[in-house]
Image: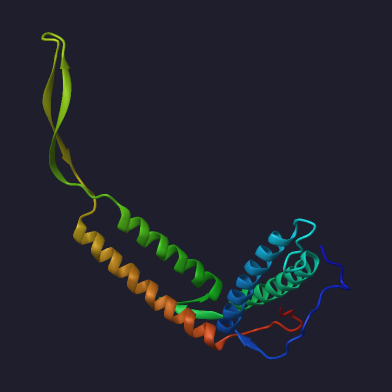
Length: 188
């Protein structure tokens, strides 16, 4: 853990849109991955083979980057909670819209993955005949009924995709015009 004397914080005053902040978050997460890999590789080493990166310095950089990530993610969360879009006749926050997009994706995956079976299926099953002491083959007939047809599923998936695309377009447009409040944030 770092103390306040070792952390370096660069204060930014330029406003960032949510879209810009999301790109910065992605960059910071990538940097965190690089740094934590470096730190893990340099924590223990043979005494006569010093690693390329110093563990303590890399750990300090990890903590500074983590602080920047937390601050900017919080700013995005705040902006998502305050900004709104109008979808299907009602206003909703970006936070709600993002959750709805996640649920649209989940519902499309679930609906698309359903096994729809209808009609008669026959298959052969081996069976032991006690009287003859031999194995015989029995044809088993199963009748399936599906409460959802392929045509109905395709129509529902089309509707879900349309709703997802319309809402996603609104969220993306809002992300490009909505500023985050990230005054005093750290940038690594």
